[in-house]
Length: 211
Image 1 (cartoon, rainbow, N blue to C red):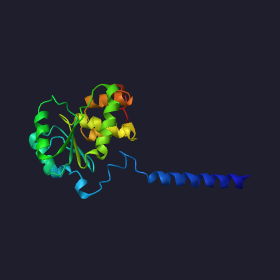
Image 2: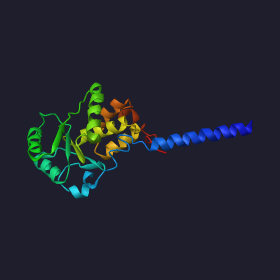
Image 3: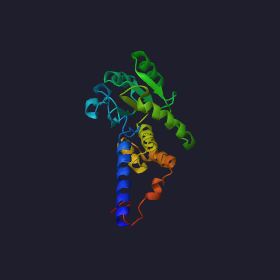
């Protein structure tokens, strides 16, 4: 009986290993891609190469960067630095957007207007569209912008969670890209997580998350 059990367990183990290896060979959108740049010209520049060209610039993946509103000069700079696709999360009525859109069209920089909704019920449809754009619809590298980079950080967080990254890990990525408490409140609500105030430490007690 012991030999049978041992052999059976070994077969199951080998099957599991085979499945794991097969799964590892399949690219997972938003996890493995668009993080492996397909060519040198698909790579987004590092912050050190951008300098003061953009406010709140963050290279969130090899082929994707986020930033605050670029302005007309920033649109031109994005084109000069090799960005092929500009995703704008602002509405068309926000300051500077019409002029930036006009300039992008004039210089041949692909631009996608994708206003980020603030209502939780509209987030899933928004993320479906965002996933298509971030996963290569307009070419790489991609620059995603909004007014201050808070919406871009929130959108990146939600996109990463949508693609299977643990929500709390996705939130940490978002914070690194400029996610503010206001943006995080939207993200937590969309992901069904406890609000930040519910995680505040008890006065006089240990800090939340302390070991």
